[in-house]
Structures are given as structure tokens and as C-alpha cells.
Image 1: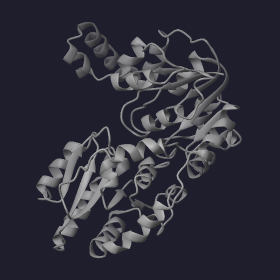
Image 2: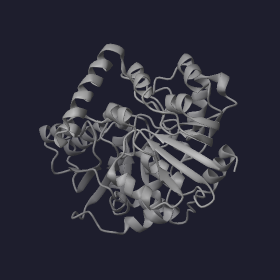
Image 3: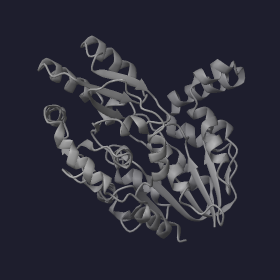
Length: 394
């Protein structure tokens, strides 16, 4: 099989992990797999180079400029691309991101024929449009079958029936990463119900466990809480951590630290807020870590504070590392955790998170049976691999 996978970039986040894990479960020896990225980065290129049977296609000049920040070119003193980026930014203000994307696509030649082509990154329609993989596969790729992936809550991405009709009519399958995500998509676009399917995210289980033992990141003997996420309040609701810590301190509870592992657009705001509220002694910002798994393994509990997710890969990663999780009760959560067995599902608000964390600070022994249950779990990718084979017809 000749397979093409199109993605915007391989920056940090669940999309990156999901794609690498998927590639590790494709037979690269007996299939030809090409990767087309709008923007390249050196770390991802090195990872791809280790995978025999996989080819990273040349970076598209015009599309890469659309998604590369101006400061990247300024730091390199690349005058030509700086000027082009200014022109593209002006065009976006006049015509919008979507029309600009379609215009820049005209400069990209069509790729060769593939047995199957995957648009791995979904579009976002709320606020400024972000995406382009679906349009690229639709307009620039010839393939026997075309497959689109949805990694997040379609309702929160701004999907409408009209948008889905225009976007997904040319695809043979629309893949959702959870059954709850599929149900939401089917409600929005019932005409594609027979095209939509579920393929769970996969995990490099051995690698997670191996990396989780590389070091102990903590120099604190008290109760350690960790949240590993993009610092993006609209979805991940890291601001809830600040509110919880304020209340815990006001009650006089101590002996804990909450570690926030990750970077993102709201990191500075969160740091400033923590300083303003005098929480430097209980909230620790580590920034982005290429290996977050020791932070999970060595913590007492991981907390996912998200308003919404289509999966929440960090939940499974934490349990693979041996650590129980607290997760807000978004619709998809019960698909991936067992409440009161390996996790605690809270109300999807600050009060719910606060109540559970407070209870565990006072009764740490409640985490022991959760850890014992996790230790007996059999983590594998069997179901996801079978779902993937069904979609690819291999």
C-alpha cells in the first residue's frame, strides 16, 4: 500500500504523540508511507529518519510561511521570507485565513497517486480559521481512498452541518478518536454517519514506562499533584488550578505542591496570576518537557482540568506510568477511565476538582486501591490497531 499522511506540523501536543504512535503500529516494511507536513521542525525530522520505510516529503514553501511565526524569520534575518510573511499577513486581514490558504495552495503541485491519503489534522472554525489538511487532501492529492481525522470535540471546533458538507463530502471515512466524539459529529452531520468511525489513540507503552524511570523530577517530600497539558485556559482550564490552590491555602491546608508541566499561550498569564495570589510555594511551573513521564510516575496523582476533550491522552499515559488520575467529567472521560477504580471523575467545574483534591490531601490512603488496580491493568493497542486496519483495509 502507498499511504500519504498530511499534517500541519509536529509541534508538542496530543496530535504529535498520536501520529508517532500510529506510525509505530503501521507495517513500514511492507507499505510505503509518505509524510507531508506544512511546517518542518528538526526534532520531528530526526524522529522520522529513524523509521525505515517512511519518507518525509519536502516542506511546501508557501504553506510553511502561512504557519511559521514572523519572529522565526526575523531571528534568522531571512529578509525575503520576512517580506513574504508581511504580505501573507496583510492578505489574511483582507481575505481571511481560509481564502489565503486556498490561494497559497495554488503554488503547490499535486502529489502522486496513493492507495490511501489521511488528513490527520482537523480544522478549527471558531475564531480565526486554523487547519488546511482537509483542503490539501481534497484538492492536491489523488488517492483511492481519502480519510480525515478529528482529534477534538467537534462542537468546540465550530463544526456546523454546512461546514461538514463542504469539508467532508470528498472523504471516504471520517475518523473520531472516541465514541462520544463520533456521536457529536453524527449529530452535527447525520448525512455522514455511515462514513464516520472510531479509531482510538495508540500509545508506545514500553517507551512511556522506560522514559518514566529516567529521573525523579521532584525535590519535595509532600503530596505531589501534577497536571501535564498545554497552558491554554479555554480548553485545558489551567486557571482552575490557581483557583483550587487559593482555596486550599485559605483553608490552611499545606504539605502539597501542584506541578504544571507544559508551555502554551496562557503560561505567562498563569504565572503572573500565581504570583499575584501568593501561590509560588504551592504551584510550580516547569515549562515544556520533552519527557513528562517521570513527572507522572513520581507524582501522587495527575489531574486533568479540561473543559472538554475528545480523549485526553495524558490520562492513559499517566496510568501506564502507574499513577491514578483525577479528571473532570466531560462526556468522553468515562470511555478511558474507570471511576473509583483507576481514577476519580469530578464535576466539570472548579468546585468539583477542589473537593476531590481537598479530600485526598486529608485522606491520602484513598489513592492506594487505585494504584493497586492500575498495577493489574493490561495496557495494549490491540483494539485501536484493529480499528486502524479496518479503516485502511489492510
